[in-house]
Length: 202
Image 1 (cartoon, rainbow, N blue to C red):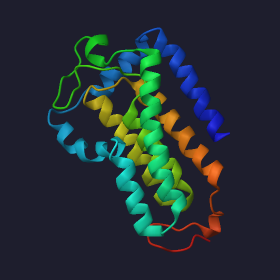
Image 2: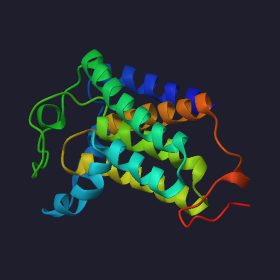
Image 3: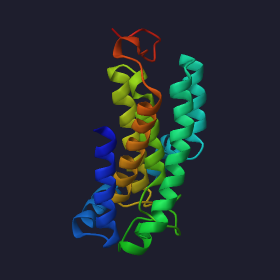
Image 4: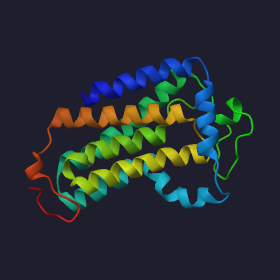
């Protein structure tokens, strides 16, 4: 169901994105894109979780923490695959970035002035990582992982790199790929999972 849900959201988002930018998305972008100048500096560090370096760093951290190959290998594999598949989808949909689609966007430090928008590779990577690691985290850990992934997506809107649908599509892609990895390799029962503090989850 998780994989199918991600695929459905990704497919529906792609159909909308092929037709350009609907008014509701432009309004939502303008709302989320507001903010104080300088916010991009605060968001820069968490945004790197969704970069191509994110899977390597998270993979190393999960191995150091748990010594389990499934979350460690999955972080690298699903994260890198999410980044590459996002590129393929970008070329297929060929929707631009906010600078060429939305009037009056806020140009900030790090705002890309070239390339394609749908889907967000950063969002795809961040949600792939959160999905892969989710079975090994406690309730608060899972909430924190997906909150961080959501922050990555928000930061991409804040720096005018992506429109909301770009981020949603990327999140759906990463969520689906992360859960596909978990389905393929298997995940522990909840009683066998380990939270960030190393305690067994009962």
